[in-house]
Image 1 (cartoon, rainbow, N blue to C red):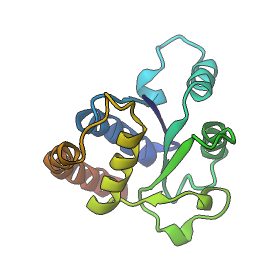
Image 2 (image 1 turned 60 degrees about the vertical axis):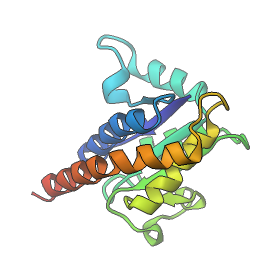
Image 3 (image 1 turned 90 degrees about the vertical axis):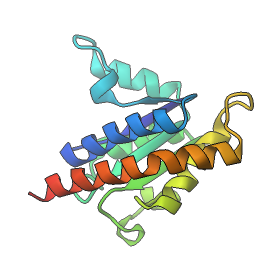
Length: 164
């Protein structure tokens, strides 16, 4: 299952790359996609993004104080949603609180950078995998618990660098 990870700006971009690496460890049957990593040099980047958005119905939008109203974020969120009941657009609030989010992004259940909230996100993604590719709940919890400290540590380092 392809997971489109949307970002805009340096902080959001670093978090998107962290999410890509970490999700691939926790849910190996996923295919996280980040434009900065996955668009080949020399290709037409807009066409590449459009193609992925057209064929993807699961996305994570990395929201920060600096990109919350960025047109590109809203464009990608709208394209991911596509009005389909089966689409999932998950907002990941990097340095924001749910009260900071206004429509149209406020309509989604937000993921906070906490262990409990991230477990809910990973569970949602796991549930969207085909039955033979998803992990049993006990296995998912074990894998999540193994990789959570790495995610937490790397996110803290990213946030510290962003404050400088």
